[in-house]
Image 1 (cartoon, rainbow, N blue to C red):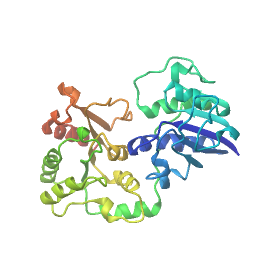
Image 2: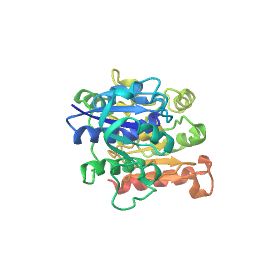
Image 3: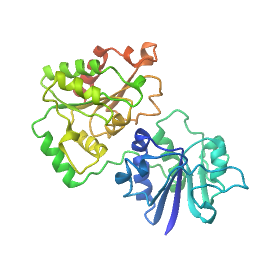
Image 4: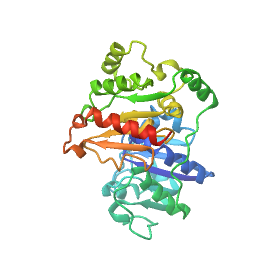
Length: 326
């Protein structure tokens, strides 16, 4: 069996979800290869997303902390000196980490660091620097396959999960998904604003599905005070991971609204229209190119404060998305 190594700085929930289609595509394009994922730091592929990614990743090595100095071991945690990989793909751009990674033996090494200086395969023409992060990963994969990779592969879910999701949504249509949480509080639109949006669409006859992370206790309490019978899909299905439930639920949503967070990325399946709210980060880098996924950035209102985005603007954008996708 041949071997591929993918190297990254590490993945939090949002990063891990964005990269899942890349992992899927490697699996489908290179069927006779084992995929090893090496993270310089921590990665959700060895924890939260292990169940979802283990179908495609043969081995995960986290906290590898590769060393650039030739007289030191490549990694204190793993014995890379004895390893050889047919393909190594470097997904990060910090030069000293790329040089350290090149100490691992390989037949083909691909990296965009330092304008592709260290890469065995290079693009024939200059690629756009400002694009969705996942598209940049597909560009590197395209160098190996010598063809443009289709980045719109549909997500697949187990039949049992789909049946469970169908059951809980059967009397909840039309339904709008609301994900008000955020790991970084400065990326979080006020929960009171989400409540106003929810009230508006409830009065229009829509059901609301709320998607919350494990740290969103305050938000859940506020939601329950306003909507005592609030609908939380993740609370109703057991034996499946939260990300799987959120992603599969998008097949039953008329539209969704989220901050630029992990749950927001879970909702970005292209299976339903979505509106994402941004503040300090580049929306282009973290939003897939899609006619049904739209963004509003606080920078449009000359501010880095996400709460400068007006509720009225959000409501109007959601209505436009629903209308244009009926």
